[in-house]
Image (cartoon, rainbow over all chains, first blue to last red; front, side, top):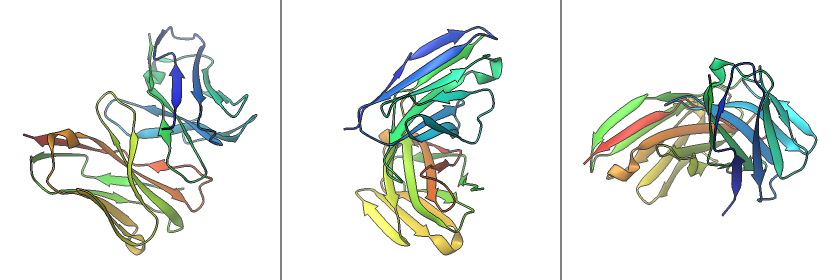
Length: 111
Length: 112
């Protein structure tokens, strides 16, 4: 079974602070993704990457940066956290046009 | 830009009922069509996929795809309380570069 892990699993941050969410996959997948999910709603793509050292903007990239230092690792950075960024964040990995495997999620609360 | 819409937003059905969930998409060049299921507090997980027009059945679940109508659906036969979850449709291919476009989801509740 594919394995995607995320850290931390939950985080409380202050407005204006910096937050880094980390994702690690052991699937040998080229593609990695960061989504946010607001309560009871679908997934919105923030950033994704199909090769190390390169990232692409998704549908809602404003206020977020991404970093892909290796095939296995993909980070999401909130330089100046805001109240509106309170959400659950999911990382996923996949092969090209194949099933996406999701991590367990990180619950972020910005106060 | 791909636009994926799901209906209904929520659905409550009795145990044993046949349930139908719908998904429409806007990019006629789309190639891959997925249903993901997310139980409360858990990560989404792929349920089924279809890549060509027609129907595909796996156990109690059936996907139907009509590319000409820009529509695909998920049908659940003999719905069980354990089927209660958020169902997300997703589409890839066309102008996308390996990414999925997700719908907003249908919240299904199956009453025992």
